[in-house]
Amino acid sequence: MHSQASPSHAQVIARTRHWLERAVIGLNLCPFAKAVHAKGLIRYVVSPAHDDESLLDDLQRELLTLRSTPAEEVDTTLLIHPWALTDFSDFLRFLDLVEVVLQTHRLRGVLQVASFHPDYVFADSAADDLTNCTNRSPFPTLHLLREASLDRAVAAFPEAATIYERNLRTLRQLGDEGWQALQTAVPLVAKE
Image (tube, rainbow, N blue to C red; front, side):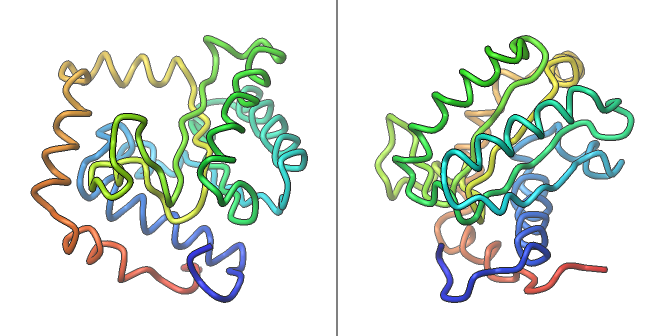
């Protein structure tokens, strides 16, 4: 990863929660995140996986757990995997397997998976383009979402189609220094 020492699970969750609060919610990159965060409906899971196969097992388990848990208890899951798929090209290849898992468990139309990575680069962007930060997280992360919750959120937010363009403007206005400032105040330990 980007630091020398291997972080603890508590540190991984603290850094991810900080990113969610400061960047995703703070910059309103996802207008749907604030409500589930405020209600405590986000499940944070740190995968101990160091290889694709172990991560695939964790992903399947978490997808099935999310499907069987009422949305009033857990609406979405962040499966954070700091020791697996740290190379972005490997991460992208793994996303094909994610689709196979969704298909195999007949979860298409029920759940979907969004992807975040510290080195995320959109296919049509340069690696140093600041707009890639909309999908850059402290650690490789698979975001497991309920289709029904997403449909409700989109229906409640009539300008959903404009989110991407608005995020690009926000990041360009923030600039590299502003983005880095958001990342610097990351807690080293989880809040108890």
